[in-house]
Amino acid sequence: MLVGVCIVWIPIRDYSPENQNMANIPGALWYLHNEIVWHPWLRAGTYAATPKTRIERFLVFSRASQELYDKGMNFGVVNTYDLGKCSGPYKCENLEEYGPVVGCESWNPKAENNFPHGQWTGTNVYPNEMAASTPLLEHWVSAYRNDHRGRPLLDIGCAYGRNVLAAAQRLEGSRSDGTEVQIVACDCAKEHLAVVDELEISGVKTAWGKLPEDLEEAAAVASDVGGFSGILLSEVLHQLPGSSIEKTLMAMIDLLAPGGTLCITMFSPNANFSGGACPVGKHMRHVFEERRGEGKRWPGEGFRLKELLEELKAPVHLDAEAMKCFCAYHHCATAEQLRRAAEEAGFQVLLAQQARHPGHAEAFWG
Image (cartoon, rainbow, N blue to C red; front, side):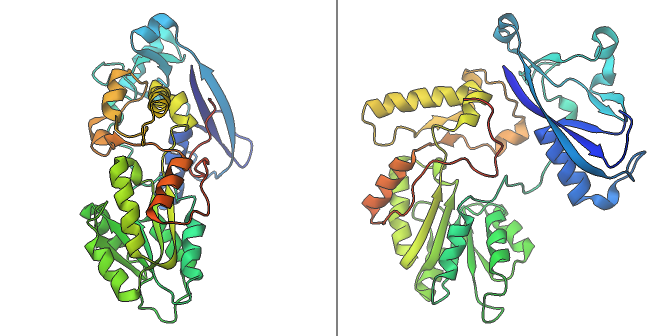
């Protein structure tokens, strides 16, 4: 069963069927971001002057027959339309023979009828994209606000700085002068730190570092100020085996100021989105429960997602460029496993729970 959501952008007044945009969620978000938010001054075309003021959402189900699915085929989007006319792919020749129907496409990127089609590869891109701010953002920022000495925050695994920027915006105007460091953005990829530097966020300092223990630059700041008031590890620990997670937690003890706050988010083996989207999530949960039954300390470590996607013929497409950014190693853990490890490291745990990330779409499957 392929489950999806179609979004229709609707203009302010009565409109013809030509003057609307229908897309799945990723396509609609691309349109919103690229043509309305990011490049509003470049909008042009027949209906560019007519504003889009509301959307309608449709839940769509489609199912391939077992015979087709066994051949690696599944239903998906076939053609794109502009101004009510087909604009691709492959010159819309399929419409002449089959008409405007939901198509049956291969998920094998080497096949001619694979989806997404090769003509779009590298065309619609989000440079420096991060899906959403951490759900623990307010807890992390509050650590700075509640610290009477105003000791800075630390974001380890900051990537392109979305959480850093969001925190800086919330803390704007809270310093006695405009020079002191409020946030240290730490990452093991220098190209990520270069992007953060280009943002020129007031009160932000970048520092190279790699978990679990190669954090000298962040440690130097901690030594100067008496430790960090709050440390954020948002969707970072899934790249580490259990033993390295334990070492990381011990290292955080040394970096935090007395009474400081450590905020962690990590992928759960019970995440519904992966189980419904492809067989990988279901497989991971099954293996996780087997290992937990055997008494494994970290039953969710060591998954190799690239290999699983190929082995299980998961109905997702990752082109060569996407695969470069894809985390090969994956570790999922429950809230209680993280609580146990944190308490063993010497932390007092105030909150440990499973929750849906507010920046991710709610799954329609179980």
